[in-house]
Length: 397
Ligand SMILES: Cc1ncc(COP(=O)(O)O)c(C=O)c1O
Image 1 (cartoon, rainbow, N blue to C red):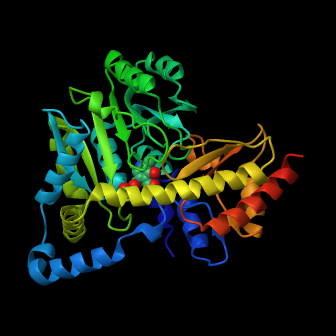
Image 2 (spheres, rainbow, N blue to C red):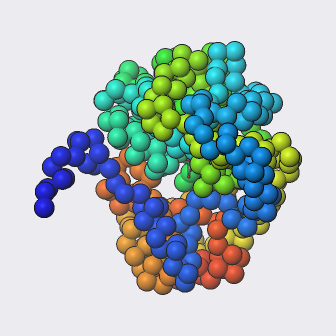
Image 3 (tube, helix red, strand yellow):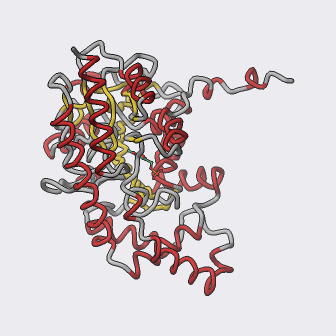
């Protein structure tokens, strides 16, 4: 047997297997109530419509659908995405839109194209684990900035920017993963001003933005950007299907020109058949009406989870009340280890994601955890939250 581990590149050695991916294994066990997932309720997938569209594409345009496509993406879909984005003020004269294999690839391509080893990146603390691992794999230096109730702590961000080490700021301003928090309008403007002042780029990740069920819509940071300083990542994963793996990236033409070559070396193009199905779905259906259905389901589940938490959780457990998206975030008193809590919860067949997974320093135990409210049934929500409430009451007494 050879020791293949000694051949591994330094940059992949420290990568942690995603706790969430590990959770997927648990989610497959029928008797586990999982609050660990990351998608809206699968009940809202329009499976019948997609079945008809897929059959039609393969029957009438199969040879085209099964061939290689172009790296930038399926032209009609690019146009539809760009048109929709334009209606939200996204994309100025210097911007180009491409289709990516999920938002995850958009993030990874941007990181790969921009970052040299050691380049500084500001991320929210906590933030999306898929981005942390992508940035780690390019050996970026990560600086976590706390997330307040109205988004990233800009004063803390500026202290880091003053060091002159930061090239990129990564943010999920709307219904943030994992906290469910939305950045205020004032902070959105403030963050763009900071990026201008310290001449760095912003990577705005917005896969949940359309899943708003309370409050007023806020403009994206990208919509305020007139000179291509903001790179914008979107996805169909949370509105249509994560398994189709279709997302998009909007950015300055000079950056996108490089990113297209990088994508070519990565996966040549996003599966054409997925792109064609989505394009046809958007053509034949009212996408906004479809998203509204998904939102209604998210709202119902969020209300159910918060009602159960209000009923069963002890006062010392503090949690966010999201206006949209699919996650909420629980903070326990300092010193509580939610990794240990998860082990006890799993014994009682309930799963969540402990907070350390979302931190720059994932090895340090966290007193926080993330709950997804969209994949369990209302009955499971009540049962699972009751179990967590009992464990918390025991832990925090
Ligand atoms: C904030 C954030 N960005 C990106 C992604 C990746 O999404 P996709 O399925 O489009 O790759 C996720 C998935 O959970 C996410 O939460």
